[in-house]
Amino acid sequence: MSLDLFSIESQANAGQTISLQGGELCYYPNFFPKKQADNLLNQFEQQLPWRQEQITLFGKRRLVPRLSAWYADDELPYTYSGITHQGLAWTQELMAIRRRLETTAAVEFNSVLANLYRDGSDSNGWHADDEVELGDTPVIASVSFGQPRVFQMKHRTDKQQKFKLELPHGSVLIMRGETQKNWLHQIAKSRRSMTARINLTFRWVDPLLAKSASRT
Ligand SMILES: O=C(O)CCC(=O)C(=O)O
Image (cartoon, rainbow, N blue to C red; front, side, top):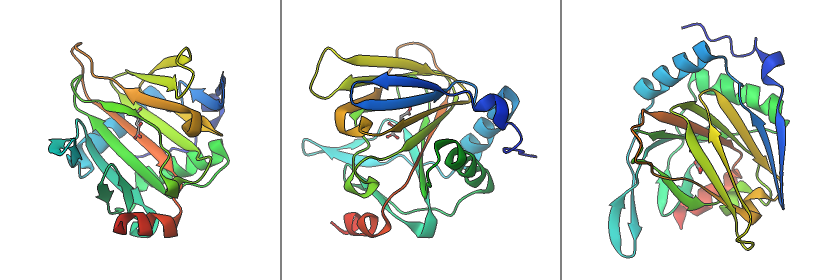
């Protein structure tokens, strides 16, 4: 498959800024043209080494309701909810997307967490990407392929403040500034019949802190 991921900058660069109290979002609804997004969805769904992790909640082992894979420079690990992923070597396509997003977001990334939501019963509960190894004000670039799902946000302290956005096939949402400090986000389960969705969150993790977090 030929993936000319760098040839479509102009249309994709029309990002929309979304201002939240104590948060900053930039949304690119058509970052990838449909055909390219279709190819990437199929390829990632079939070729990434998806794993279903287990976490311990209230003393019970539970399967995480989605599949995941973690890619990072230098095999850097990533630890959250007691799960440690060892970084896999970048595929050509993931690296090409990373490079495009680094230009768009004007930051460097060294890792990506891939999530596969198989259907509407897969989900990702309320959380923030606020692990210490992500730094104080992390920039997270979130790419969505496949089934549109609703990305919900709620302010940590001001319960009146909520925000939601359906993330379509081929879209990118960049979160930056104090977003992770002040807001939580989730992908809720849905009773609607749904096909697969893949989400990629590109991150920069501090190498030393990532290694020490994986040992604790
Ligand atoms: O699937 C999404 O849009 C969000 C993913 C997410 O919150 C995460 O990977 O931390």
